[in-house]
Image (cartoon, rainbow, N blue to C red; front, top):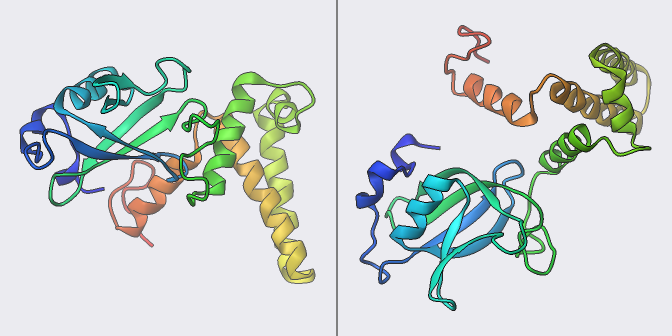
Length: 218
């Protein structure tokens, strides 16, 4: 995301409020899965409130007032970032949804909107870590502690390597899936997430210095 396009309270005057009677269309995207969640409209006051309270707020054309998503349902959209397009007349909101976004109890107002299943899985693992539902394998892993989770990652890594050299493609896929799942659990047990891994990979791809290894580049 280009820093030039990020919106902050200091850059509101640069937006093209005059093009559409003071309203800008705002596309909301799940920050973890990149799935498009909904489309709304913001006037300047709605955007100011969004940036101030960190809950995505729109101007409701039907109600004729500001409307914070989730104000009645509790399914708020926690703001991550706001970006404008090159013409400064459309907004892209990245947010962490707390519950269903659609009033029909769907994740997205666009039922077939593509997204990252790994992002969904990472979010599910985070919920398991918080809620610890009884009978969940993920709960069992967390309650076993970091050493047990790390041991499982090691076991799955060995099994993946063995599948690569001595088993069928289907076996390699299965072992790889097991390994990735357990790595996500391990990251969460350390307070980390898939998003952190993705950010580091992007830094390396762009050959940017990274906190973990300033010299690393692919």
